[in-house]
Image 1 (cartoon, rainbow, N blue to C red):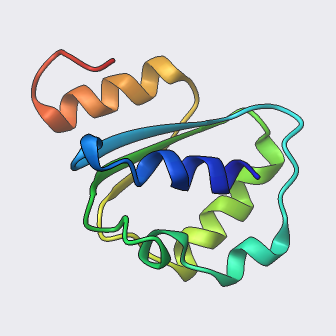
Image 2: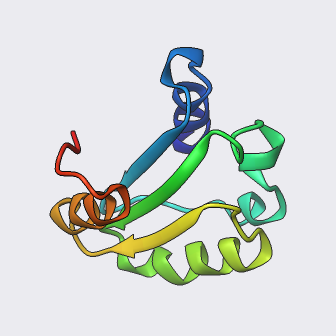
Length: 101
C-alpha cells in the first residue's frame, strides 16, 4: 500500500523533476513480491527523479531495500540515510543550495 501511495503522489504532473525523501516508519512490513518489479520504470518515474534518499526506521528492511536496488539499479542518485536531517543535508549537497523542504 505504501509503494502505491508514493507512486501515485510521484506521478503528479505539477511536481516535474524531483529529488525525493522517502521515510519508512518502524513496524513496516515488506512484501517480497515487491522485489520482482521495477516500480520506477513501470510508472515512468525514472526520468522524473533526480535523487532518492531513503530514511528507513525499520532496520530489518534496509538489506531488502538494498537488494531491491541491486536488482533494479536506479538511473538517479540513491542514498540510505539514518535520519531526515541527514537526508536533507545530502539533498542540499547534491543541489548545491540550502532550500530543501
